[in-house]
Length: 330
Image (tube, rainbow, N blue to C red):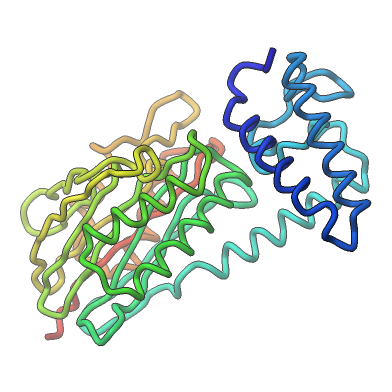
């Protein structure tokens, strides 16, 4: 009987086995294909006898993010050989470099807008998604995106990169925002495991100060102006939950020096040594005192506020904040 909780991985392994069998007689390195087939069969056998996901050395549970990234893993981190640990560290270092290269330039000025962000992974790689891109086809304005993929570690970083590729492809089509979100959701849903999903805010800002927002189940962006910050609630489900989900679009207008503050839940759900959360109320109080800062300074100041609150407690989740501000100059 298969181990509970591994049904999606079992389907993935069966799919891999079918693909390997289909190419076994058509590739030069048939020996490698046969070896992979044996490893897949071994993993399926472990699922059947209930030992899948257990380290073959200590019989303790293998790290879930490593299993999600590589379903053929057989040993936990503590029982890898020195050579295997070195190879894994090199892979993580390379993954971190690749992920950093996907991030947009910081402290951007696009027309009469400024964008600043801070992106801080809890480990070597992050599952947070952050991007800024000019609108294509001569369209006025630019897109900004901030999201959070389910899970942590290597598996979520792979999904983050996948999400980045999906949106970079769709942005070039210059679709209406709601339609673009629906297409991104369908592609993400059909190309990931059933347990994978992502919350995400996608916005388009124009030179007139008009901003369109579609929010796929993400933390509500905050509009910063003279009144208390206005929350922009979700306009649709997280990406990847249902293939046919629809997304409505909310429209706002920002005056010069007004800002939109976006963040991932690693900020508000961060806990200090006493188990107290940073929370949305604390974030609101912080933002009321710094609404006149430029985007980069506001994002940096927010991370300083979080660090002071944590008081040395470790960061347990990825944290990303983004500030989109209309410039004072017309």
